[in-house]
Amino acid sequence: MVLASATSDFVSYLSAAISEGSITALAALGFLLTYKATGVISFAQGAFVSLGAYLAYWGSREQGWPVLTACAFSLVVMFMVGVASERIAYRPLRGRSIHVVVIATFGIAEIVTTLINLLFGADPKGLDPLIHGSFHLAGATIPWQRVLIVVVTLLTTGGMMALFGRTQFGRQVRAVAADRETAQLYGVPVGRLSIIAFGLAGSLAGLAGVLIAPVGSINPGFGFLIMLGGFYAAILGGFGSLVGVVVGGFLIGFVQYVIGSYWWRDYQSLLPFVLILGVIAVRPQGLFAKGQTHGRL
Image (cartoon, rainbow, N blue to C red; front, side):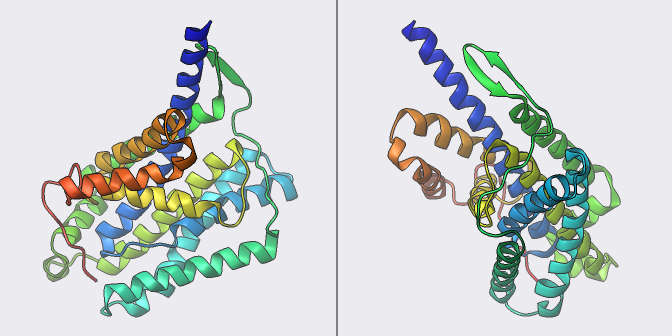
């Protein structure tokens, strides 16, 4: 009986770790995309996660749309929001210090969070899952929504790998990441790449928001912690490897929701910091980076 209960607890913790790690990985992919294309780390991603979830809530709860339609609407709008952030926070400041642009992305985040508060209020909201119900595994009850999160993350990662490895856009982004000035001399449309990168990053943030929102509740600031997790995962992956940032996301989920559930439960949210500090001390370039690539404006 004790063994069955222990197994059930472990499976429950592991399912939470995998699904939360998947969301962290999606946030990290958004960081990686903008960093490779522009050299900028956009800290507006957390607010975009929240906004994506609220847009889906607005469509499904206030407009009466099917949840899938509301989520698709959210992803389209978030692409446009990402493009708008590029035009506001990056394009006018191109050529300035990279720190100025990063601070500008914080400004975008504050604006978006304030708008969410004004339009929807600060009270927690809920979003219906895309897949209802749950199943039992080794005595643990696992919602199908968590399975969907993992599947979508793996498919998105595969799509990103194909985008970077097999398309002209991906080759151009890799060229810009390697040497921006030389890529410009060879006619790579750097401006168009930055627009697409910010737009896709916005959609990835929205995707993370609409997937994780049904698992709990949403509030204007809930995307901030997801953004931090994504940033940590990108550090673990070295800001260079798609697979690396996804593995980094899963590592963070495992450390926080499995190890943190058995030991140091009161300090569960601090464990990713410990993981990051340990990795930086041993391997500053990240677990999967072969060399350090410095993105520049």
